[in-house]
Image 1 (spheres, rainbow, N blue to C red):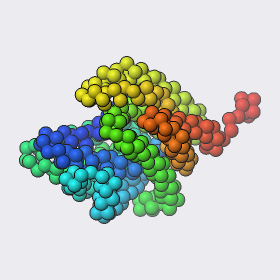
Image 2 (cartoon, rainbow, N blue to C red):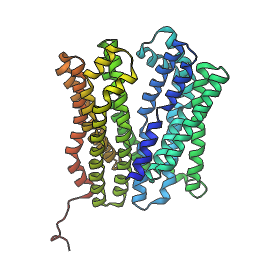
Image 3 (cartoon, one colour):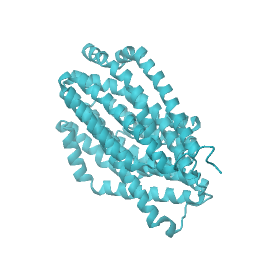
Length: 435
C-alpha cells in the first residue's frame, strides 16, 4: 500500500506547482492585473482539468482490474483508449475555447484588466489540453500497475520543465503572460514524451494494438459509462467547492481571505489522504480483477485504518501549528483573527474527509461508478440543505455544512459498501458450508 501511496502523496504535492510557478514569475514583474489574470486563469484550468480526472481514475481502475484478472495483453489497449479519449476531449476544449473563455471569465467576475490578462493566458494554455489530459491517462495507467514511482518521475519532469521554461520565457526573454502559458505547453509535452517512452518500454517496445481490440464495442461502452459517471460525480464535487467559495466571498473580504488561508490547510491534508485513495484504487481494482474478496476487504480495512491514522496526525498538527501557520500566511490582524475563529472546523475536517477519500478510492477501483455518482449527488444535496438550515450562523454555518458534506460522502458510501461487496463477490460461505 505504501509503495503506491507514498509516491502518490509526493506527486500530489507537486500538482499545484504549474500554477504557483506561473504566478510567482508573473508576480515578479510587478504588474497586479497580470498577476490577477494568471491566478484567475490557473484556477479555471485547475477546475476544468479536474472535471476530466476520470481519464486518470478510469484508466487506473481498468488497468488494475486487467492485472488482477491476468489479462496483461489488455494493458496497452487500456492506455490507447485513454489516450484517444484524452485527445478527443482536449480537441473539443480547443474547438470550444471562445465560448468557454467568455463564459468562465464572465463567471469569475474580474476587472477589465484582470480579465484581459486571464483571456490572453487562457487562449494559449488551452492548447495544452490534449497533452495534459493524455498525461492523466498515462499516470493512471502506471499507478494501475502499481508503478507509482514512475508516475512520480513524470510529475517531477513536468514541473521541472515548467519551472525552467517559465523562468526562461518570462524572466529572461520578457514574454510576460504569454510566455507563462507557453511554458505549460512545453512542460506537458515533455512530460507526455517521457510517459510514452516509459509506456513503450513497459509494453515490449510498441503500443500498437489490434484495431478490433481497441474498438471492442462492449469494452468501449463500459469505459464510457464508467467515465461518464465519474465525471458527473466530479462535477458535483466541484459544484460544492465553488458554492463554498462563492458564499465565503459574499461574507466580505476578510472572511474570504480567512477561508482562503484555511483552505490551503485542507488542500495540504487532502494531498496525503488522496495518496491513500490512489492505493485503494489500485489494490481494490486488482482484487476485483482477480475475483479475490479477501484481498478486497483486506485492502479496504488497510486503507481506512491507515487513512484514519494519518487523519489523526494531520488534525493534531493543524491544532498545534494552525495559529502559527495562519500568522505566516497573512499579516492582516483581521484575517488572522477570523481564520483562528474557524480553525476548529479545519481541525475536524480530516477526521471526516478521510472516509470520503478512502471510499472514493475503493469505489473507483471496483468501478462502482454509478453508485459513487448517485451518492455524491446525495451528498451535495445534504451539503446544500445543511447550509440552508445553518445560514443564519454565517461563515460558521458554511463550515459546518462543509463538515456535513464530508460526513455524507464517506458515510453514505460506507452504508452502501456491504451491498455492493455482495453484488461483486457474492455471499461469504461459512467453513461448514464449503465442500
